[in-house]
Length: 352
Image (cartoon, rainbow, N blue to C red; front, side, top):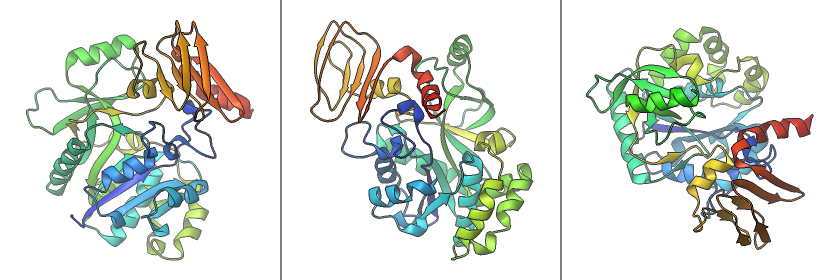
């Protein structure tokens, strides 16, 4: 296994569209959402460890989830868990981790991956990752794995690549924001658009050069602590300075500005597991397209529902179509799948 390979697993999100199962105290990446026997972060760690030495896998998460990470990933040591004292989106945490890695190994190649996505055919994922590492090892490139779109999804950003590029890894023309339905349809018809799955591969040198060029203030802020990284002084520096960073995504901060961005169309099946509806797609269904997690059910005249409860709860439903039914502790959620994006707003409303 190549000692120059590193991974950053981003595990700081709350997953509020999966409320009431996913909460601020116990977010979705720490749940077995698929009923597979492994939590989402455990599956991600296992998948990446096929290509990357375990000691080179770093977990980026909010400081409140430190114990959850160590419980669920017993092979990880405390110094591999990078604790964010404030939520500041993906750019600051990637810069922080990249500088730590540079100090250990300036020749490192790294993959940045979310902790909570579903990937089918992990062998294909490993092959794609190796292909990306090889590419980044021989060129100054910022590379992303693009997902082949299967329908005109309006909930994802898209990556447009050069139609004339005949190479397996293609030059990115531009990143496109989440489109409306008609625009998404035109993207699929064009044949040179991919979903932005948020998986990135680059050398530590390439990404730090890009931060230096496109985010000089953020880069200067984190560079002030370079001598402290990987020492006992690191925690105090991050605690004092992390929240001063701009709240911005890696896409907006760097990738949309850089000219050396490439994409490999992935050969594996992928789902971001962002909503109850996306989970419904990946679970086994009965003949009426109902998906069930844990519950024992008796369903009449009901179709295309997802039902999630504690183990062995009996749920009886008649005459319900396209609903999310979730029973968790003291909360019962019965909500139309067509309005699933609004669940995040309900969580905010309840806090208010």
